[in-house]
Length: 417
Ligand SMILES: NC(=O)c1ccc[n+]([C@@H]2O[C@H](COP(=O)([O-])OP(=O)(O)OC[C@H]3O[C@@H](n4cnc5c(N)ncnc54)[C@H](O)[C@@H]3O)[C@@H](O)[C@H]2O)c1
Image 1 (tube, protein in one colour):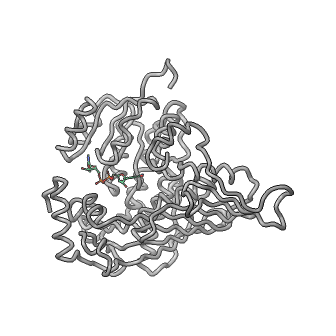
Image 2 (tube, rainbow, N blue to C red):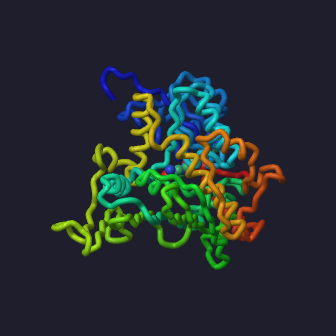
Image 3 (cartoon, rainbow, N blue to C red):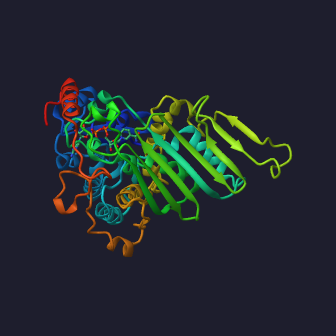
């Protein structure tokens, strides 16, 4: 921040993940308010920072501030983003950008109506050092166009960890088929590196494993993992994998016209591997190169931040966009592209992988076709809008799983249903 610039006054919604965005003074933000419906956690966080606390989002929006960061529930970002844009705030939203196509339409329209307000989609995985290096290599043009890509976000956890992140039977982590819906950590890097967008998707879902205690000893009623096969707008295909399978890790692989670019799966997960075919590589250039890249800038600051530095760069990009008045690369439309890929892949998975077109919400004619599409696996949605959370149909937690979840919830102070 230049000495002459005043701080960007920011309010944060959600004091779980939201805490990541509170200490951003070095990037020119000043936290002025926090909002959460869980009052006990809210009060302690507000006291820690010495800022105003709100349990009501509408009252929070009346606070004198420039920007809000939305880190509330996964499936409730778009309605809050719409309100914040209407209140004249810049918005940075956690994933997903929207939970239904109808919400996506409303968000795109609210963004356009808000004029010069910035919307940043806080997808952080593209900003990990290896993904930024893959982008630099790809954008050099030396490897040519993407033909086929793969990316993964595989995140298993013990039952207790899962339970304590998902307090209450209706918590989104218990019913969102996240192996499909939570696709932005893997699809985001492919889009950011190659500047493509998905235009069609086939979704495939792997149902819960009755032999796996990390699933049966929870309150979850959704599938274990999911695969998206995306047709991209340059004709390439990308395979995106998410879920709680064993084999924790993130991965990006790009088969390009003149070589392979990928992150490594072992021997240090932050490394990049470049492969060129011996018969066509330039003279003096090795067939294979493996190295650990630095961040392109702010290496020291990013190295200290969470999610492989990604958390530093989302805030950095948000500040840059507000200061310059130019929308970030991770703008509202790309946030919608990624979120819609997951939403519509679930429709596909329920139809055993049938292809589904992904609309482009930059276009009002495409929006009009989806403005009344409210389908969701949310158990609290009206019956006419409800989809199952598993390809097996409606499933219920085991009695032992529910009892274990309740014990785990009580340990973190949650005593509701
Ligand atoms: N990008 C990443 O690496 C990353 C990592 C973790 C979580 N996330 C995302 O961050 C979001 C929050 O996740 P979390 O891990 O904190 O768990 P969470 O979803 O359980 O927490 C959300 C918090 O928001 C509060 N909240 C819910 N509705 C509210 C409302 N209307 N007004 C005010 N507060 C409200 C809840 O009480 C809770 O404290 C999710 O969308 C998740 O996908 C992203």
